[in-house]
Amino acid sequence: MPAEVLLKDLVDGMQFQSDLAKSFLNTVTGKVVTITEDEFRAVDNEVNSLGFSEEELKDARDVEKGEDYIALPSQFDTNEYKMLERFADSIDNQHHSDELLRALRGRGAFRRFKDTTYRLGIEKDWYTFRDQAYEELAVEWCEENNIKYRR
Image (cartoon, rainbow, N blue to C red; front, side, top):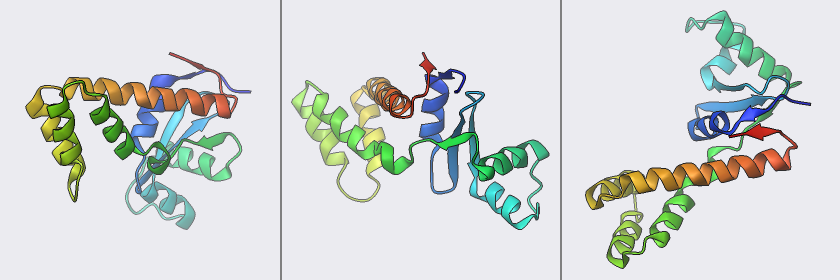
């Protein structure tokens, strides 16, 4: 089975997931690759109009074959919004907690939340919390998929 994967590489790949880019683990090498929708499109259509390098397209082709790659959890699987709520609930200062929860209401919640953490002087605490939450998700994912990992 696979070489060990670095949890940091998994976390980076998970955080980069979006509608426009997907991250995958090569189960043989332990390498995490991120492929954009444009790269997949170039491989599918056999037209490289955006000028991707052969290396970039090689990864996309290899992922398309599907033999040695497994998709990392998507942005929907990780649910960063829930992380924001959990962080707000974990704050001992009730006033700060309430402000963070208010920031999560309506459009632009992510930006307001980040701005609020900055204004309250707890931005670094948020990033530490988020990174730990992603690492926990990465460990859980590795265990579910029988992937060896190291910190």
